[in-house]
Length: 173
Image (cartoon, rainbow, N blue to C red):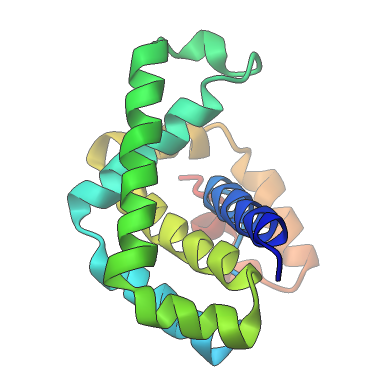
C-alpha cells in the first residue's frame, strides 16, 4: 500500500475512532464485534485509569461545546479545547502504540480499521458510565425523570405488555 494511501486509511480510522467516542455517549455498543476487536476493546479499558477516562470525558465535552447548538451552555476556551485535544491525542496514541499495540495490530490485520472505531466506542461507553455514576449527574438525571408523566409512561408500558416495569424504567416516582 502506498504511503499516501496508508496515511488516508489511518486518518479515516482515527476519525472513525473519534466519531465512535463521541457517539458512544448516546448509542449502544454494536451487537457483535470480532474476537480481535473484543480483545482490543478489553485492552483499551484495562489500560486506562480513572484519570484517563475523566480526561476523555472532558475532551468529549469540549468537542461538543464547539457546536452552536450547545455552545452557549459552556465556556470552554480555545486554550482548554486545545489542551484537551493534545491530552486525548497523547492518550489515544499511548493506547494504540504502546499499551495495546499487539491487540491493535491483530485487530487491524484480521478485522480492519473499523476495529479502532469499535474499540474506542467501547472505551467511550465505559467512561460515560463512570460519569453517569457521579452523584451530581445522578441528581440531574433524577430531575429529568421527574418531568415524565408516570401515568402516560405506565400506559405505554402496559400497551407493550410490560406493566410491572413502567415506573422503574421511566425514572418517574
